[in-house]
Every structure is written in C-alpha cells, then in structure tokens.
Amino acid sequence: MRINKKDKILFLLVSIFIFMGIGYAYLNANLSITGISNINSAKWDVHFENIQVSTGSVTTVDQEPTIDTNKTNITYNVTLNKPGDYYEFTVDVKNGGTIDAMIESVTSTINNQSSGELPSYLKYSATYIDGIKIENNHILKSGEKETYKVRLEYNADITPEELPKTEESYEISFNPNFIQKTSAAKPIIRSVSFSADSWDTIKQVAQTGNASNYYNIGDTKEIDMGELGTHTVRIANMSTPSECSTEGFSQTACGFVIEFADILTTHAMNSEASNTGGWPASEMRTYLNDTIYNSLPQDLKNAIIETKVISGHNGTESSNYSSTDKLYLLSSHEVWVDIDGDSSKGIDYYDTSYSMTRQLDYYEENNVTSSNYSATIKKYNDSANYWWLRSADLDSSFSFARVSYTGSHDGMSSWGANGVSPAFRIG
Image 1 (cartoon, rainbow, N blue to C red):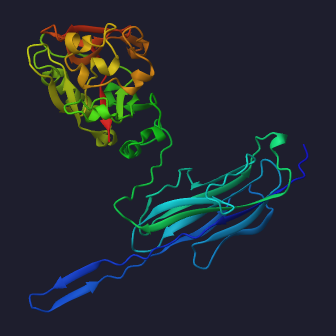
Image 2 (tube, helix red, strand yellow; image 1 turned 90 degrees about the horizontal axis):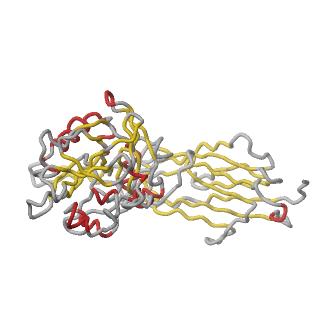
Image 3 (cartoon, rainbow, N blue to C red; image 1 turned 135 degrees about the vertical axis):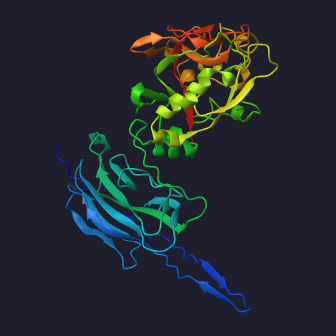
C-alpha cells in the first residue's frame, strides 16, 4: 500500500514552571543579649539536560530536540511519513538545587486544547524511561535526576480508511510543573508486576490505597522460605469497603491481603483436643507468628503490618476473641459467603465472628459459596489436602473449622495435623 499523505508533527515540550523557595534559617545565639542569626544559602534549579534521540527514530526532522537557554523548555519539529514511523528521545530532568522538588501538576495539550485528542493513526506518550507514568506529587530530591522518554508514533495498526486524507500538523505540549516539596510528596513507584516487583515496591503500591491500578486479584508471586521450600502467594484482597470501619470489625479481609495459594506444611491447632480460648490461645497462632514468620525473607517481613484479628469462640464465652497478628489463618466467612446455604448459620451456628469480617475479594470474584467451592482447594506436596481456618466451632469444645480437600466447609478436633496456609497484610 503506497502512502502519499504525510503527518507533519510539531512537538513542543513547554516550560517547567519554577517557583523559587526561600532558604531555611539557622539561628545561633550566645549567652549575651546579642543574637546572631544566620540564613543558609539556598538554590532552586530544576532543569533539562542530556537529550538523546533513540535509535530507529525517523530522520525527517526539521528541528532536532533543543533545550532553550533557561534549560526549562524543549522544542522539536518532526515529520512522520508512513505507518510504523516513530520519533523518540530521552531527556534528563535534574534537580541541581539544594531544595527537594515535587511535581505539583501535569498538563498536556493538543493544538493548545487541554481536552484535545489525537487521531487514531497517531500515538503519543511522555513517561519515565522505564514506562512509569509521570504523576502529581512525584518527588525529585536535591541532586537527583529522572529520565523522561517522549515518543510519537504513526500507528501501524490502522485500516486504510483511518489514514489522514490531507497533510496534518499537530502541536503537542507536555508540562510537568515543579514546586518545592510539600508533605504531599510521594516516591515514584516503579512497579512492573506483582510477580517481579520487590516487596518494598509492593509495600509502596499497597500504601497508595489504589493497588488495583497496579495489580489484579489472584496475581501470584513465589517466595523462598528456606527449609520450608519455595511457595506461591497470591493477592487475595485489595478493597477496603465501608464495613471495614465498623467498630470491632476484623481487618483480616480489609486492604491489601496476601494469602498462600498452597499449603506450607501440616500442624495441629493445639496439642490437646481443645478450642478453649480460640485462635488467640492456640498453639497454631504461636507457630505462625514465630516459626513460620521467621522463615519469611527479611524484605517481606519489613512489608508486613500487624493486623487486628477477630475470631469466633466455642459458645462458652460471651464475646468474640481479638488479637493482633502478623500472620493469621482465614476464617469461615473470609472464604465462603455462606455456610450450608444459609448465611445466618454463620452467625449463630458455626462461627460467632461471621458478621465481623467479610469474604475476601479473591473468593468473591470466584463466586465461592457453600455449593460452589472448587476455588478453595489447596495442595500439599501436589495433592489436594485439608487446611485449617482460625474459627472455633460454636457447638464444640475441641474443634476448629477447616477447608476439606474438595473445598467444602468442614471441621476437626484441634489436635489433628492439617494444612497450614496463612495470610498477611502489606502496608
């Protein structure tokens, strides 16, 4: 297909607006009445430097990317002749001053219109060099730099009908506005994927409160637990609905929750047949928050936060149990939305804490109910196995709830060795 039309694209990277900050004062007074006040010098300098045109960019350039004398403005003029052509360059944004800076706002315009849109045959992006979006409040510390990547492309994946009928010209501007750092400043989160990200990055993502912008429910990651082997964890929850703010509500299914997708080992809830004291008094709780926790990589332990855990009792107590844990087992309601087809039974028949927690996003998305539970199956040594929950059976003095090897709700005496598959929160 012969292309006769040309898109002449004028790209303008407009000025970074700079607001001068005052310095910081250092006060020094001797014991006499005379005081000496010293004001340290301060320098504000956020600028562009080091433009590099990427290999493969078109050579039909009327003006190479040029930084102005103030080092805050870049202009260039390029022509894209055919689908698949692109022009790309990188440029460093350097904070050469003594004051930490941050991006107050990011604006883009097309032909001087903030609401303008490019036609389907053009693609444009301005990101950090690793593809991360440039966002408000991103910090640029004194002496540091970030590299931006700007790319304009004639879309190769278009139909003949989408091609321009006349020669077109576009002026595109991208404007990150820097100011002196405030308390709103945030680090740049360089997330690739849940499986590839470091635990420090995952922690930063969790702290945004918008983890769903980065990850998906069910995303998995492998961790090396030394003598316990390598195991898979998955994102079980990222939402924090209003019920999580209810007084006395368990936080075990609120926020960024990760659970083991498999079974680590087998262990008894208690060495004797008793569920007195429920989860807080169980030997399993000690085992998880001691032996299992200490088997985790240090960078993961640094990301785990303490969680308020509400657990059911066996009927001899008047209220549910509360504890604060790093690792915890799930409860009945956090897996199934109902029990035996009747959600009310979760409150007054099996688990007294049923109404004080919620179903995890993972199990909700998999529509886990008392009649649909294949998504709850977990394996130990490649075979489906029973795994413990923290819920004490209301009508028993010695049993805790568990998930059967088929995925259904079940229970067993506390001294039995069943699968251990804990959860934890990141934040």
